[in-house]
Length: 301
Image (tube, rainbow, N blue to C red):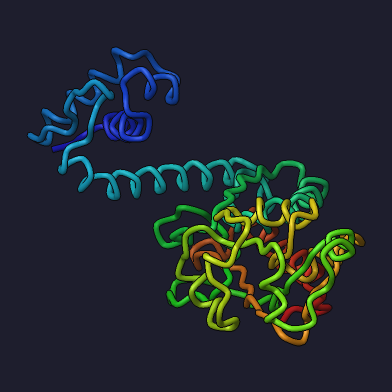
């Protein structure tokens, strides 16, 4: 049985948007077309994928079970298109699309300069920048290249360790002028601490380096690293941010450097099948060089 990819595409659109009309807008097709494709997929599979409710179309258990497989198909189709776009360029030239996954803070604060340099050197290259703290699956081709804060474990990946990004407590100078500078970790209890709302596995690991650094102690809570950084810059309190990033802002002062320091091992990774791809190779090298300069590594190992 052969099922057209467009049927799965419509299925994913409805899953994400919750309605036929929303999926049609997202996919750029007519609403009746989405309805026909979903109905055709249900008929081909012999399954009911959605039920109607006042809130829209609700996915069934079967739809939830099929979702990861449909998303894997979507990632593979997108990877195929990126590869084809590179092959249409001049032989040996860096052309076409390359999809790069990075964390929120690195994506906002560090990547723009790296991408701008890439664009100047390789004008035929198109960069798709995915900002997420989720680890994208390179084996499923959710991205071509990823910047990760943990060492990759899959043998099929090419990886380069760039160095370690140090984290530390920081606050704006005028906040410290108003509230005083803490001399010990215990002094933090008298300050407005900026931290997470819901703990993640990474947060739990990082918290081991600082006993007592827990949600109930935070005056300002957000799970967005970018928002935490903005609060620190605004002088709202004391929070954790990347040391090389804080060094770019003269108004930020490091607090308790001897009492707390945490290092993020930083890696650039891609699938080994992309090693010979000019578009991926130049992007990979640019990431290694750019992140190395950001961290302060002269010659990344």
